Structures are given as structure tokens and as C-alpha cells.
Image (tube, rainbow, N blue to C red; front, side, top):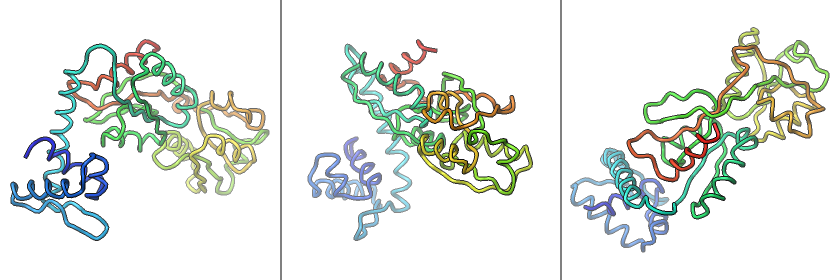
Length: 286
């Protein structure tokens, strides 16, 4: 068994298919199947259960998976260390909150790309919970999330603080909006802003409310401006929106008033060069 065999095993496990793994790695399927059988014979254990729709890990395969992942990460980081000279190449997978993307991330990426044109950059938006999971699972290299991050596998850096605001339709009062099971218009479960709004409601004794979810800032603002319910997001988002005249911005209690955006990446002795370079840019700005 060599490092390539572990990569094949890991890719098959992640994709759930010999065919998809072969396509991703650039091999014919028979080669993938043969290498998996060699590994199974060497370990004298079946690693995959073959199904009509693909493959799933056996109990023995699940034991091998974290070791294969760890070894591959160390090998890839080793190769990066010895390739760190001259102009940077490679990729950078960035995750960002929708609001952070609108306020800051797009500008950060544009500047980074201008200075590092050979790095392929991708951007994925989501909730804080989803983005943190992406960094832990190594589907993201770095994430820009709201609030303090405490995780043994992650490092973080505070960047910029945002003032939050409760939003209602123009002319509406909070007292009126909180009567009889109000509608809370918010991002999906796992969003830091949503959690803050729920705590704010709990402090006011509001336990029963309806929830309407959207991943779109504009949709949330349009629904709020239309009088459907209340929402919470950074005040600066509202100020730059074309709907700012159609919503009323209410101050948040001091305890909830500000939230800090953090850059988050995997903890380790050696930070991936593209991540290190991006962090260096962020440190220069803040």
C-alpha cells in the first residue's frame, strides 16, 4: 500500500462510487477497483460494501478513513512546504456569510486575485455552522463567520465588528410586531444572526413565533419592508440597500449590539500557503 492507494480509498469513500472516483482521479474504473482490492487483501478486511447505487464503507473501512485522511493531509502539506518558493499557485476555497460577502468578502477577493492571479479562488456562502463544518471537513480552506469560534481543530482571527439592528417595515413599532406570534424573517438554522434574534426575543418573553427562512439578503429585506415580520442583520447592509427607506431600523440592546467577523482556518503547525497569504492581506487591513 502506498500514498496513492490511500488517496484512491479516500476518494472512493468521499464520492461513494468507484466510477466517480475514477473520473475525479483520472483513472479507468478497473484500475480503481483493482487498487481497492489490493488494499483490502493487504489488510485482510473488506473496506467497502458494494451496492447497485455505489459503495459504502464497512465498519473496517470506517476505521481506516480517519487515518487515511490524516496521512493525506500531512502529505499534501509536506508537498506545499517544499513548493513554497516564488509566485504562488494552487487554489483557495473561501466560505463566507452572505452578509459578509456583500459587505467585505468580494472586495477582499478582488484585491487578493489582483495580487495573486495564478491562484484559483472559489467562494461559497452559507451559515456560520455550515461554514465551520466545511473548514473542519476540509471542503473549505478558510471561512469568514460571525462571532467567537472555539473549536480544537480551528484557529481564528477577529477582523471587523458589525453593528446589528432589528428591522421592521417603515413606520412599524416593535411592540406591534411582537403581538400574537410574530413572524421572524431570517437565514437558515445555524446562522449567528438568527441565534441572536432568538435570544433577543426570549429576553422579551416571546416564546411563540413563526419563522420564514431565506438565503437571500434582498428577499429578507423585501419581506420585512412588506410588513410580514421582523428581522435582524448588520445595520450597514440596510444602509446600502435600495430598500433602506422602506424599513425602520431599531437599536439592539447593548449586549447584542455588535458582532465580530472572524477568519477561521484549520489548526496546524503549517498553514496552507494560499491561506497564509490571504490571512496576511486581512492582517494588513485590520
